[in-house]
Image (cartoon, rainbow, N blue to C red; front, side, top):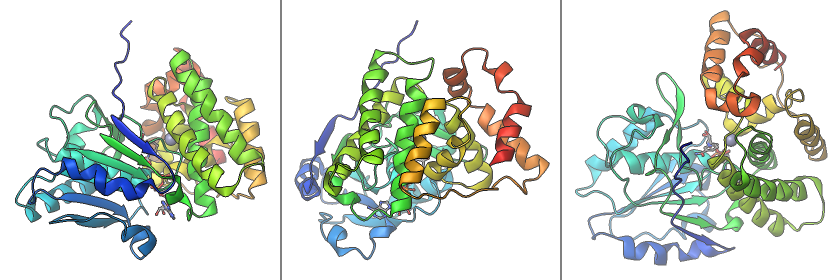
Length: 360
Ligand code: NAD
Ligand code: ZN
């Protein structure tokens, strides 16, 4: 048995208002005045003075606003890297991602590609990165994906949606300021929060479960139940706790694996561009056969927060689109093995998978 030797985020700060410490945190990491810090910031904050006037800019530092309307692509990473190389005389002192999973993943990928030759698509997979990334910092502004703590950066490439999983992917520094999540729209709060909840369910019911994953998964699940099913928390407490649930959920899957909902949601994302959080919700709603308790609670949470999920997504798909979607989903063998055991291929046949997709 070969056990995973998992790298973790080296430094983390947590607290409401801790965003104002970012300048002090970055200062010692500045290589010289020509080596800028590049801030990749979700463009939802472009007109938001409350946040963007507090971004600590000095010398040549630059903000690049990023749209999170689509999930990150390998070509987008390559274009950002080229833009940065062309614009600055020296390699940046660091990349700081401020946003949700989309921007955090872009920040990780750009930091890797600034020190590694070729294109981002060449590194989609496991342990293909040879050179350490430049210093990179993650500042989540919405909670749930666990991208702030994970060893991967999920990218859509020309022929697959797959992460750059490597020891150089995790952030060197994460700043957790729950106050930054205060303006997340309700629906999005639910979708991304449910990503965390689904991480817990898939990890805790999977065959890869171990005491390490379980300890984080149980804590995260407890927090999710408190946040999404009870009325005891203030808004601030709820924001604080969801940020920690996301962290723990990410830690839980780091040492186990996700399952059916994630595999199927990757298929939806690849063919239809459905985003991760909502895609997981759409799929999970139909998975009571695999996660009876988890889906029951999910439906209760959905009802409590009046969330309506889109329906009929796969109604007009062509044969070839169905085939691609199933290829993408079934290509994720570890997820299926975690969820259904070693004999998963005899349980999740193409016919079975197709019939599930046809309901969505
Ligand atoms: P997101 O980053 O796509 O953001 C969702 C929406 O919320 C966007 O419209 C964004 O502008 C908005 N938003 C973010 N913060 C806000 C704020 N404070 N106020 C108002 N609006 C705000 O959503 P996400 O669910 O965090 O991330 C999804 C992405 O994360 C996917 O690309 C997925 O592949 C990736 N992901 C990565 C990992 C990993 O381990 N690397 C794990 C899970 C998901
Ligand atoms: Zn997820």
